[in-house]
Length: 463
Image 1 (spheres, rainbow, N blue to C red):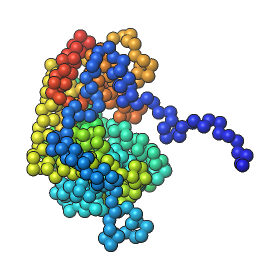
Image 2: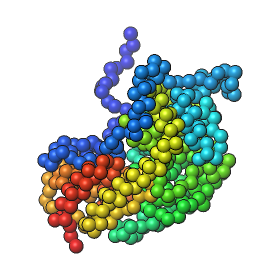
Image 3: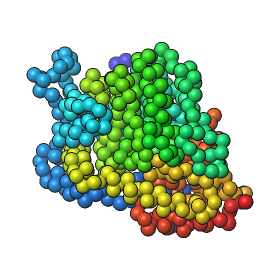
C-alpha cells in the first residue's frame, strides 16, 4: 500500500467549475420564486410558450412506437465506402440516417453545394453540445478562440472545458443607441483589432449569423448577415474580410446559425463565401429552435468531412448518442416544412409577436431595438428610476444596474427579463447596464399580460 499523504480536501472542485459567479439564470429563477407577484410572466428565457407544429408532434408520437427509434442512433459508414485510414474508421458519422438526409437536402441549396449526409452532417444533443463537440475536437490547452463581444455565455465555458483561452474582440455600440432605434450598420468591428487578436495560438473564431441571444437591429439592406447578441449585421464584404483572415492564418470558423429559419431580412452564410472559407467552416443549427422544441435537444453541424469526423469523435465521448425518436420527428419536420409553408408562416407569426410586444415600449416612450431575426427584444430602461434604498440581495446589489432592473421587475411587476451584461466582460459591462432582454416566443395572451404589467413602470419613470 502506498504511503502518499491523504488528500486534504477530497471535495475540492476542478478549477474549470470552481469560483464561478452565480449565473444569471439562477438569479432570475431565484427572484421569480421569491416574488410576491404571482404567477410570474417569464419573458426572459427563450423557451417557447406553445407546442411544436402538429405534423412534428405526430411524427414524435409515431416514432415512440417504433423499436428502432427507441435505440441508440450512432451510425457507421460501411468500410467499403470509407475514405479514411483504418484509424479513422471508428465512427465516420453520427445520428439517425433519415435526419441526416433531410438536413442535407434542406441545406444543400442554402449552402450552394451537394451535402453528403453520411460524412458532412453530424447530429448532436442540441446545438450547444454540438459546439462543445467542435471545441473538444479541435481546441488544445492554451489554444485561443476569438469571440465577438457581447457573446452567448455558453461559448466561454465550452471553450474553456478543453483548456482553450477566449480572446475577445468587442463590437462598438452606436452613440445614440440609448435614445433611438439604431441601424445594424452602426455597430462596428474594427478589423485592425481583429487582426491584432490573431496570433500563432489562434485556433478558431466564432461567428453568429444570425445570432439573437440579444436581438438584431433592423436593416433594410438584403445583402447583410445578422450577427451576434447586439444585432450587428455584417455585410458580405465584412464577412469576406473575416473569412479571408481565417484562410490566411489557417483558422477554423464555427458559424452559429441556430436562428437561421427566423430571419426578417436576407443574410449571408460564411460557408458560401468561397471554397477556401467553406473548407474551414463548421455550420451549427438547431432543430429545437426551428420547430419550437427547445427541450428536445436536437442540434446538428454541417461541414467538410474531415472536420465533421472529429466532431463526431468528440460527440461520441461526450454523450455517445442523441435522443432517437426526436431525431426522427425532426427529420419529418425538415421533410414537410417547405411543402406546408412552415418556414414562412413561422417568420410571419414571430414578427407579429415582436410588433405586438414592442407596442408597450412605444406607449412608455422607451427605446428598443427592432429585431431582424429571432424572438428577442432589447429595451433601454435608462429612464426607469429604481427606488433607493431597495432591498436587493447582496449578489444582486454588487452586479451592474441591469441585474437590479431585472430583480425589480420580477419583484414589483411579476415580469422576468434577462440582464444582458451577463454577456459582456467586466471591462465592458457598462455598455448594456440600462438594457433588459425580453423573449417574445410566447402565446399572444401572455404577451398581452406582460404588456399590462409593464405599464406599471410609468410611476417609476423620469422625464
